[in-house]
Length: 182
Image (cartoon, rainbow, N blue to C red; front, side, top):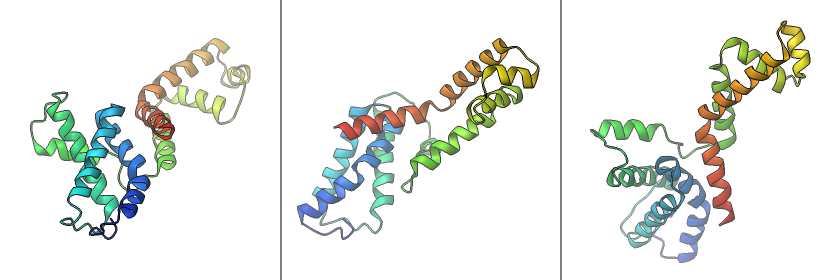
């Protein structure tokens, strides 16, 4: 599809194999349903195959990502899961999705550090001392002049906050894991 008017099924299969996982992840990010995401991506590739003589795609990554995003947004709109009042809301939502140059490790790490930076100052300090500096609870407590139970409570609260803040990352990683198994 880098040369969109090709009729060779082998070229199209290669295109499918190389983009399927990324596009499924993009759709899953919107619809939060693995089967629906796979269906959306398969429908997209079926459309491309049927229209291969008519389509003129210069950048397949950008085109496919945008098309799958839009199809996923249409899916949730049709399903009635979200009531969109205007196209501006749809565009704003699409801009929050992973883009065609998505770098999972960099984005996950950046999202995690951003979430850590939103922790209350004392909780952040305790969390980093435990995880980054690998200090024991007892050592953290003595350095900060607090009880070991306070350290445990603060770390527990930090993990709860981070789980909530980074839930999308966890869902995305789980989806990619299951996608690689199928």
